[in-house]
Image (tube, rainbow, N blue to C red):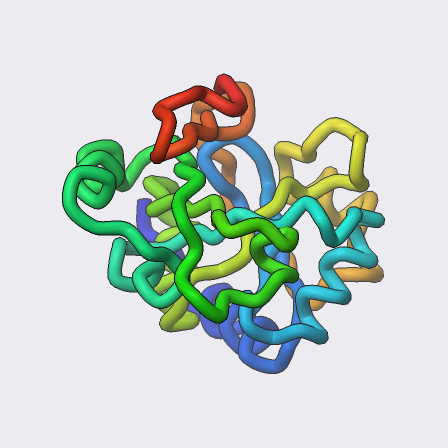
Length: 186
């Protein structure tokens, strides 16, 4: 699937200027921003009406975009790489200095190398991993189309990336890399 250049430019401009964007992922539309921009993350939390203690998932086009945020090696690193790119999110030890707004104050961080072509293209275009949380208000069902996102959140977002969600019916599975436990089934 080819992602047209102009939507990527618009999305990149919005993210680079501290905005919040919506974009398709493997199962639902996601909301994202620059994970190191405190103002953008605060705006994202306000849009979702989300508790900042929840933390975020970071998505990336490849493992190198996640390396500054995580502290993994050896067997755990191999385990992640075996499942990526793909619809599995891993909770891993966070690197020292990762902001609490990403981890929710925990020593771990949820990360995924996405397999969705639009989400991949976004991470490549911005040059860094993006926050990823479902496009919805907290405790409401996630949205699965750009039209639904536009109808609910249009006035609060800086850009809505065109595209279709992947074939998964539920948000990605989340696994704990240290224990192997499934924290959320897909």
